[in-house]
Length: 259
Ligand SMILES: C[S@@+](CC[C@H](N)C(=O)[O-])C[C@H]1O[C@@H](n2cnc3c(N)ncnc32)[C@H](O)[C@@H]1O
Image 1 (cartoon, rainbow, N blue to C red):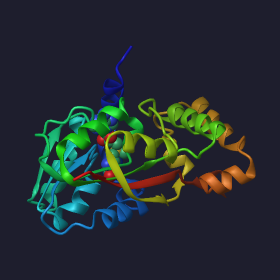
Image 2 (tube, rainbow, N blue to C red; image 1 turned 90 degrees about the vertical axis):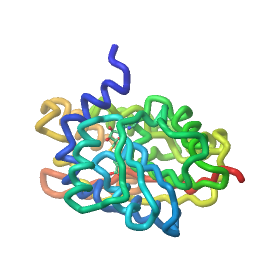
Image 3 (cartoon, rainbow, N blue to C red; image 1 turned 30 degrees about the vertical axis):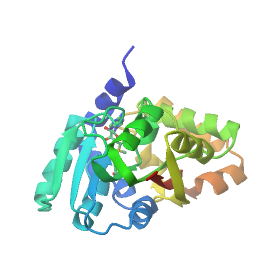
Image 4 (cartoon, protein in one colour; image 1 turned 180 degrees about the horizontal axis):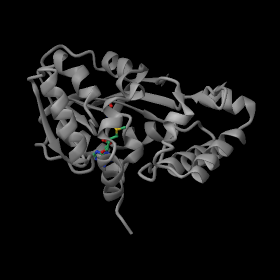
């Protein structure tokens, strides 16, 4: 069986251009809230983990001293480096690295960011332990990711739907599980926020060019099986002819390594 890292690389190596053009990744409350939580002063040595095509790293670069942007998938790192060059961003470096094993010296960084990625990670506890290790005492970790509602039924529903669409999805956990794991890793949580990214078109999100029609239909049927309250409250579902628009719940955390 393929390791999760191999599945992730197989999946994301084909989609660097798709991500680079994705409004859902380029914008949204998760980017604003991470920036607000980090409140950079201009001196921070910063690491952006699972940078994808660099949206979070590029947002922070003008506001901190230096950013290292890392990702498991070489094609995503190459695309991010190309975009950084086009945008003449100079205080940025790139590295291919797994979130679970960071090639940085202990206590060498002031700020670590990670956005819209941990639900793909093979080992979230190892990731959090590595973030804690590379941050200096008092350093900040600011993350945002899609989460499941606090409901056993919807945790199972959401993870089934996400995995049907993209087999590199590992697990979207509810906020209570994030809080416990972040505190177990030795951080103090200072702020949290429930946010949303852009509403997504189902027909765009489901990637019909990649997923066969029967899989697209299975996912559509799964949405239809939600109760009207679940669809509205948790997934902001809005019909639009043959299509519909929806969003995943997102959770952002500001956590500090103890001094
Ligand atoms: C949705 S994209 C990233 C979005 C990006 N952080 C942003 O703000 O636009 C998810 C990224 O996670 C990366 N990834 C998945 N598992 C990883 C892991 N274990 N370590 C590092 N990167 C990983 C993938 O290669 C992919 O580029």
